[in-house]
Structures are given as structure tokens and as C-alpha cells.
Length: 421
Image 1 (tube, rainbow, N blue to C red):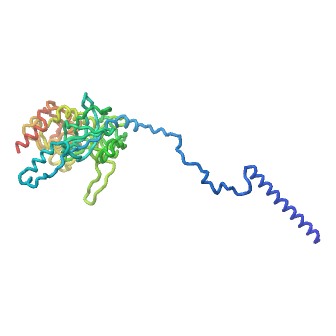
Image 2 (image 1 turned 90 degrees about the horizontal axis):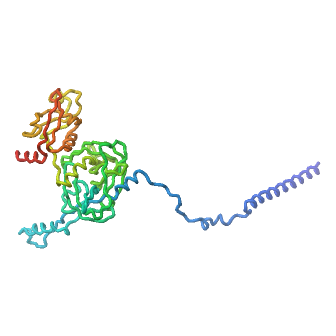
Image 3 (image 1 turned 90 degrees about the vertical axis):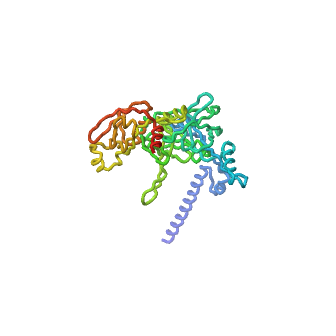
């Protein structure tokens, strides 16, 4: 029995040894078949010495888009506008103040272009090339207070600018430059056809010409947005956009996807105050619609000023009047939700001659709805002295119309008021 067990154990060891040797042969064959050996590879410990350097792929992405095409069409016409002002220097004569010599020296210096220094920068766009001259539209507040102007072309060339005229009401100005370096001229699109949500592109020099020809994009957020600033006198019906607009972008173009100028960037709301705190605001920029721009710059280029007809009234928006006041003082039907309330009619003006009175509520001009004072002014500014308009208004609960002959302009009306005062 013991021998049997012994013989059995020997056969077991012999079989185990044979199996192990076979297994090694199989594993060895696997490594040989794959070009390897059982020994550790020396290359695995020195992989960094054989790695290839980084390379730029030859695959190119097609980045052409509607926006890049639009920018290419107008970017060459976008310029920077530098407002130059006389540097105030004191006289070297210590007795100058006493005898008035310093003031005379300063006055003489103001006429010398070499004494002009950069006071501020903005943007502009070349819209017309006529012979030896070209014309740039920008904002009035960009050139305001200037003693000289310098225009920086898209290629960096600097040329002298001549101020042709300004309009504080719409915040527009026209500058004349030499056409020698002008290769591209922008075209205007129809701002009345704009749709909320369509793409909008702003081009200009945020923070100055150091960042000239910067491009930002967004959408049209709103059209016909009333913007009124009693301090500056600006009163426009603006395009609202969320394309980034920063100081220095003023006067630059707002462009549609076809590369047409649909507005001139003018302002933004960066913050607003409440009773409890200041609120930061993002994406609220405003541009003067191109249709309004064209009317104004044509007059500025030709006459250096804008002549506007005047009605001769003071007014407030109906929306700012309480429902109790509407009922007790105005007496207009409850169905009348918007319009302009006449608070005063000036003597010997078109409004008085047409029979308009205090507390009349104007709702239409030539069949076009009037919802605010800005609407009324925009319509009126589209007319000429000598035109006749039809005003629809409510006096109490009765709707009536009046023919108004626009016989005087706003500057003459202002002069009459000053004389009366």
C-alpha cells in the first residue's frame, strides 16, 4: 500500500513538472511571436528619450462666417477720432497775472496746433468720399470742446480732421478729412427694417486707439427705445443692443449681418441706482438708427447745423400721468393708453395758430401713432420748415384733428423764448 502511494506521488510530481515546463514554452512562444523576450525592455525605462516633439496639425478649420464677412466689408472704413485741446500753461513771467500778460500768452498758444494735446478718444466711420475730401460721422460728445481733431485710419495713418458741424440733440457730428488714404467707405442699411433678435456687430476703439478696430457681437435687443438726457440735451429713439460697447466705442458703427451700418453707437447703461443700492448693468448699449443718422449728417455736411421745425408746446407723456389725473383733468377715454399731453402752448407758434390747447392729448401725427414725447419729436424732426402736418388729438373724450403749418424752426423758437424772458 505504501509503495502504491509512493509511486502515485512520483507520477504526480512528474506530471506537475511537465505541465510547468509546457506552460513556460507556451508563454515564451507568445513573447517571441510578438517580437519580445522574457527580459524587461530597456526602452520602457527611457521612453522620454524617444518621444516625438509636439507639432501643429495640418488640419485647418474653416472659420469664415456671416460675422467675419460683415466685418470685412466695413472694418476698413472704421476710424479712431482724437479730441485735441489746448494745453493750459502758465507764463514764465512772474508778473504776468498782475498785468494780464499770462492770459494773452495763453490765448496765443491756443491758436498753435503744436500746443494741442489729446483730451479724449472715440470712434467714427467714413461714409462718403467726394473728390479730395472724405467725411466721417461720429458722436457730438466725442468732438465736444475740441480745439483740433485727428483721425486715425484703419491702417494706423493719422490725418488732420476738420469739424463740419454738430448736433447735440441726436449726438452726431461730421468731420472732413483728406481722401488720400481712404480706400473703403461704409454703406447704410435700413434701420426701420430691423428685427429684435437679429445679429448686431459693434466696431470701434474701446479705451482708445490702442484697441482700434475691436469687434464685439450680439443681437438687437429692442428698437425705438426712447433715450432722453436733460443734461446733454440728447433726445433720440435708439436701437438697443447687447453687443459690448465701452468708452471709446462712441461714434463707431453698429453693423448688420450684411455689413451695412444700421446705427452709430452712442451710449450704454453701466449701472443704475435705487433707494437701497447701486445695481451693475450688463449688455445695454444704444445706437442712433441709421435712418435718423443719414438725415442729420446730410444737413451737417451741407449747412453745418440742423434746422428743425417746432410746434411751440411743452409736453409730458400720458403714461406719466396718474389714472386719477387722466379722469379728472384730462377727461380722455380709458381706452386711450398712450400719447402726449400738452402742458403749455406758446404764443404766436404753429400750435397756437392751429387751435391746440393745454391738456389736449396728441395720439397721432400724419396717421403715425405717438406714444411718447420722443416719438413726437422724432416724427417732427423728420419734417422740414414749411411742411404741413395733421395732428390727431383728444380734447376731453372727443377725438379731433388739426392742420399745423410748420412755419418756424426750433432755434428761432428758443431765441423768441429768450427774448421774452
